[in-house]
Length: 181
Image 1 (cartoon, rainbow, N blue to C red):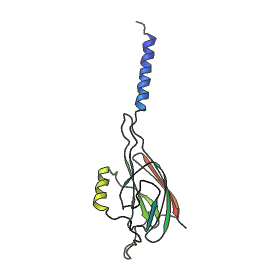
Image 2 (cartoon, rainbow, N blue to C red):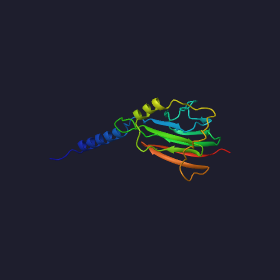
Image 3 (tube, rainbow, N blue to C red):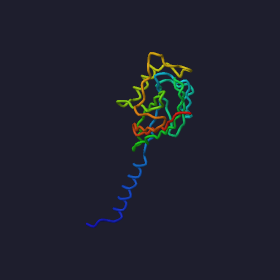
């Protein structure tokens, strides 16, 4: 029996259309969350990211959009630091599945900002629970370190400027920072 070329062509077009449909049926991008944390509250904190409120709470995660942003702060000891950061999101997955969420934390040290990397992945339940139970103090004007305590040090070998990158859940957060003169 001889095959009809028309059936083969239709079959091929159906397969190509199905493949095209499936690869273009991605879900929404996942959510990205950003938190600032500190041991001793900074005297001042400014972030141009509209997702970050005027009063920032220690360790509280704020839902943020992709983009490039500028922030600056004055640490508890009076040292001033600036930072540019870029957040890029994890795209949605095929079959209309939403992309994975990612949680980033930037630690504010008197020796400059640094990305915090959790030992294990955090889930939304972990983050929300810890925010509600332990993060009750916001940014306090002029808060200083008690004399008998020392602030934990930032990663070894830090200078007055630098860059760091972290990838979590398919998202990328890159910071470039330096000391304000």
